[in-house]
Length: 398
Image (cartoon, rainbow, N blue to C red; front, top):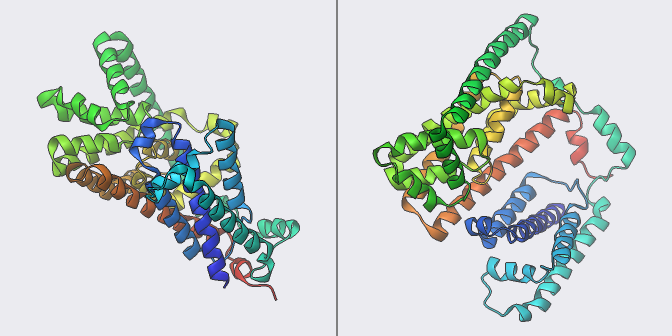
């Protein structure tokens, strides 16, 4: 019975997330065209199912109600309450007029809420519900993420600092040269501005036309464009990957996309090295950065893999983040290569062979797969931090 309750709660929470994101997408037509409401609902119902399988208890009791209330508040404030009906029509391919759907949707909404209210109200019968003081005690007993770091000798730390110093000098020189060329050569500045304007449209057709306009130099321009979008444009690189597949075929397109993305990731990593940790530690704290360091050292390769699979997350942010931590370059570079290779091949194949709804469905499956891996990382981090409390956390009340 407990498993069924958890399963229903997480599935309904996933459904609520899907509606929230679909509503937010309705404010931006370009993004709405890239991924449909039906695909978002499908992805997050699947995500809820994965959560129900992975977790045996409900820890955030009111998560469903928070998400639902936030969704309704946005709909009410923006006058888009009827949009929820249209999302339902699209998500579940219902051909009934919107006005006739209002009562059925309201009835289902009430039923789901009543079931979840009952689940939360009777939670203590099926699992241990901790008081505020007990949660504080458990948190105090938990191992801090920064304490999970492997022991590093003073010599190794000194060596890392020396290497980072050299990386900072190299990166600063590259940045200075690049800025001089950009502002001193009008042709370079104009071409770069045009390139950024093109990829900022989030339209694969425009990117394809732009690359084809360079004829035999299309591959070179694509390589440079991938690096440039990595540095200065927080735009998903899969737009260029799909364009390369359409122009050069999926095999050659995959090779070009993978190699140029690797170069872009390396540049982002070293640019972050040039910025250094100082400003970030002042904005946060050394303790917070220590926790981030350990996270990247222990789980960074999985994080990189996930972010590369998710088509709507800019992978460049992860490259910058890794550069700000103590993660070494080669582990980062190797993890990047391995993590992005399957995704590049898949997106190249999709771009070269699939179109329309089939393409969106495939991207949705990849997104769901990435979210499932994310659940695995969350469980691994939790288990590492609460090794002594896991049996207590999952036990039922006596």
